[in-house]
Length: 377
Image (cartoon, rainbow, N blue to C red; front, side, top):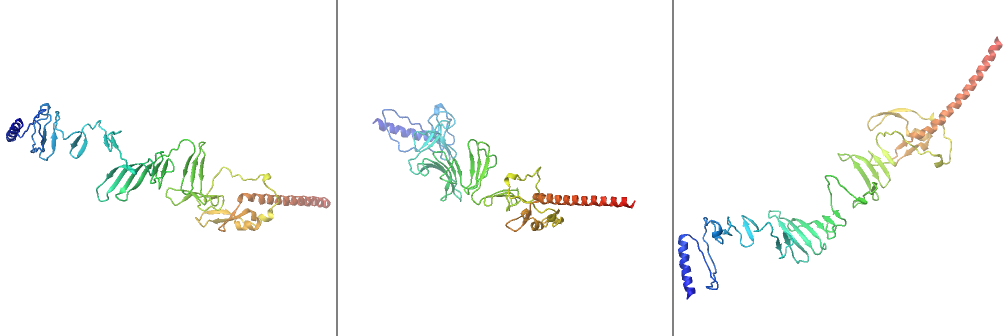
């Protein structure tokens, strides 16, 4: 009987309240009466009572059908429970200290995502535009074992962009980094590359190895048939070429024909030739004045740039002193100008002998002339 009377009073109170201030206050008592309310409809209201201690617990719906709640402190909050909504932003009410767990009720960080998927547990970020760019952060149980990867690309064709193994190796564009940093593809470094401690090695897949030892030694290891080239800023001109196949070095010459092949002038304070007698055998004298007399000193211009020069021709020297001429694979000939000193020395000696012989003859002729003068007197 008391429940019926209470229900009638509640209905009258509701009708009266809605007609006056559109505010409904419901008070329940324990242990009785007991009732179950299946639904409650709130009419839109853009002028709710001020939120404060006396209106704590007040609910209202604005003209956009958004539910607001008064926790006793102004302003009204759009939070129900532990979450709040600000426009399109959803966040924990106590966002400064609360940790969020997805797949776990014991988050160990501000955001803790956990799953028992044997393949991977991930966070997916997608752009809903036409290309459908997708990025994922994945933690793996297998492939790689206990590893972490970042995937990216257009939806449906995503691929691994970054891999970190549980042992610390990092791979870019590879899922199996073989070193602490393994990059598949070209790499650009805009700044310094510092390698500290121990033996430092830079090695390409083609076999080129650049080694820096702890003692400050710098070593380039070329693979079989490899070529090391230094070019100028514009790109096509080879300033320095080192060829493993021929063991030759070219300066301004990508195809050196000798151990050191320089195109252009060379300036030095001295050029030293190996000439120790203990390194030589089978000594013989070379033609001196006779050979030199067969050579011609010439002036000429170079075909390549028209520069004027003087010298001799390798063909003339080869006819007399073949040991002083080198012929490369292309048939071009070169003269060992420094070794021309040997026949020149012999030529000077030959001339000196002639001079001495002529001096003796002149002296003898003078004696004869002096003797004839005395007789005529």
